[in-house]
Image (cartoon, rainbow, N blue to C red):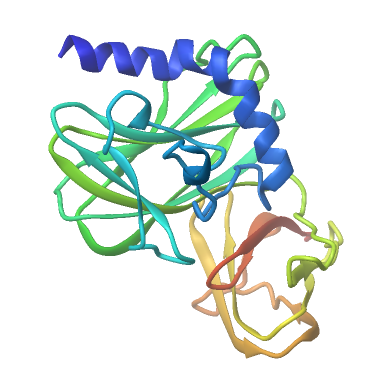
Length: 279
């Protein structure tokens, strides 16, 4: 038990100060969102480090506890957390802006009833924890299940540590862990196949473009994180598109004025943004 407590304390208090900047710079060099290598497709095996690029895992303290697996939700690889007599974990760190809002999403599957949880912890610039960690418990699921939440960075926040930590004697697969900045519309410049044109702040019109054909979906959420509208566009060929929201929810009821969050996504990627509905 003492060993487990020491590992947890290092994860939140001591580890980020020593390794946080390494992970931070990698995140901005390689990731579509602000987390590096979100689908664990890049591994450092070729240089003798058995960890996914941009992430730290419990392989540092116990060999075989966080291994590369082909049981992925998307792509080729994921992380398999095999906790035996101590915990197993995978973690990374991102730079955040004070007061900004972020959408966290992680996918996991396990045959254990309650193996552990996704954990989010804001840190100061010195690596000190701010408040209590945000926990998203992982539940039994034979297929991948999404765990999602919105968080707002406190005024003193500088980093956000994202992790999946599992208890002893559990077996869990994790894939597609992302952190999107929802304070502004995410925009890509066409090199990622899927690009989003800027949204007018007072408009209910969404414009986007595709470089190749894909199945596209749209979800709209209120500020409580509740999904109020889902649109399945189906397969769309390459080209530019525009969708006008009729300001109604899934039941056909007109929604009230205010700010809503959008998530436009395909099987392998997603983009988020805000939309404002005036009176």
